[in-house]
Amino acid sequence: MQWFGRVLVALGSLRANKLRSILTLVGVIIGVTTVIAVVSVIAGMNRYVASTINQLGANTFFVTKWGIITSEEAWLKARKRKRLDSDDMKVVRDLFQSCVKVGGNAQTVRKVQCRNQSLADVDIAGLTAEVHQMTDTRLQEGRMINASDDQHRRRVAFIGQEVKKRLYPNLDPIGREVKVGGIPFTIIGYAEEKGSFLGNNMDNFVDIPLSTFERNFGRHRSIDVFVEAASVEVMSVTQDEVRSILRARRHDDYHDDDSFAMLTSESFMNLYNQLTGTAFVAMVGISSISLVVGGIVIMNIMMVSVTERTREIGIRKAIGARRSNIMFQFLTEAVTLAAVGGLIGIALGGGAAKVLEATTPLPAAIEWWSVVAGIAVSSSVGLISGVWPAMKAARLDPIEALRHE
Image (tube, rainbow, N blue to C red; front, side):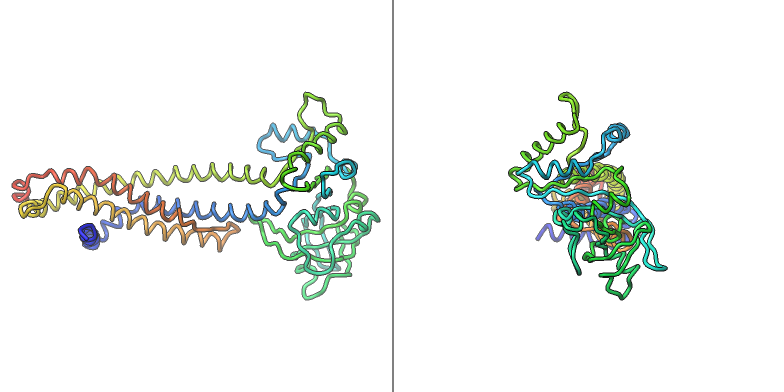
């Protein structure tokens, strides 16, 4: 109850000097707002990226020429590698018993047209039936590409929701013709809506059989070989087997690195966490400057408060208040002042995160621990900033304090 009374006195002091209190809290508010907004956006992105990347499956990986490029040196190294082709995929499919599914995927970008309607820069994927089964593509109507389509090089197409909405509004596209790069294909089905990923529309695609893709758009592109292991437990064994046969097939020297890269959902998550971790540390460092400035301002205002209330301190000491009572009162005021700034910062930071989510492709999720951390950090700033003014107030001589005008 004594502590609650001190808080009420502190809040009364804030109300008595509204403008000064608001100006004092600007640094704390900016610092906490920045931290909450950044943490909320990063947390939202983490959830979205994890749900998107992990749809590949814990026991699925793919082999690619390029891998994850994080530097110019890595890009130059990957550029010199030989491309992966359909024959590499077929060798992996035929020789390894621990692989449940093996598929191939090649990518390009083309204009897609239906009569006088067209879409530019549509993602065109040439793939085998297994790739659809190993990724997050879900059928809404019709059917997906099957092994027979790939075997007979049929000109059939499986389209995304963006293509359906733009080229076939209010129409059933199944059985209709669509031109991909000027070549006619028959639509056999379309996917459920995927949405966007970091601003990239995931529904703007057309899938066709890999053999048809290579026949019409050439075999000069490197393909990605998708592999599904029997279970998570044999994942590493399966990767070693695939690595061995591809190294032998591609004549990689014993002392040389692989002439290809193997990627899993974990690889992408590790890279993503490194990138966002660096951004998070940088933003926290920037916001810490605001908190330090806010702490200095709080200390300065508390020193002014001690000077203004010298006579009050003298009266309280004269009627029996101890040093500890005076000290705890001023500490409580400093902590309360900073905590109020923290609460305002949390509200503004959460609001900013939601505005970003509504107006940009960035997702946001307010984490409970960030709210607790915001209050704790702001209160700590107040506590540290209030120690010296509180000690000065507690050490005042009551006689001298009563003489103060």
